[in-house]
Length: 226
Image 1: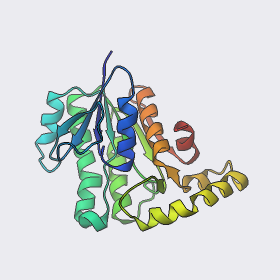
Image 2: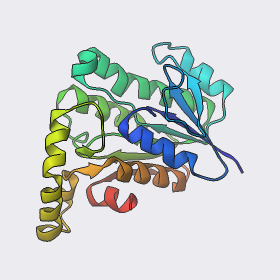
Image 3: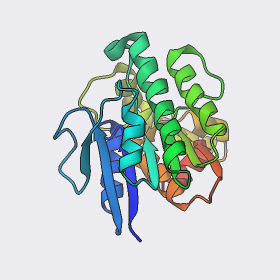
């Protein structure tokens, strides 16, 4: 049976990994929501132009396309979008997608890329992620939430925190592996590669039971992404 996967945020670091992994699956149709044509890497995915600012677009989308799995990896920064822009991208767009999916595809499942710290949010970014998690807790659909810490990737855009984290990541990971291999707290905040996050999110969401809710962070996130 053909599975239909929709990815929101396919141009981001985690989203690009999700796109590649999903397109490699057999019997799967992958659709990437994009603002502009030809913005995702060449792949077997279907590009679907989507205006996140159009409140009617969400119901229009899910009333016209099949969707078994919705993967949400949307995200921006205050530096790029401002405070209000960050809230729209990280909170409002995901919640609007979830609302529309629940109305039109009540048998679907959702995978959401959140962040470490969303369970005790401080600042606009974590409060936005926490709001989406709260909406998902009220959702009757099957849900996977991943909470990665500092993401390791080959991002072309320079971000100081990620640059510094990547420089110290080998030492950090060695120290945790040697001195605190079973410490959930230590692994919770250790840097993690985007490919590990994407594999954990995709594989767990595809294998989840109806109405089941799973949250992965720290060791459980790494193990699920191996």
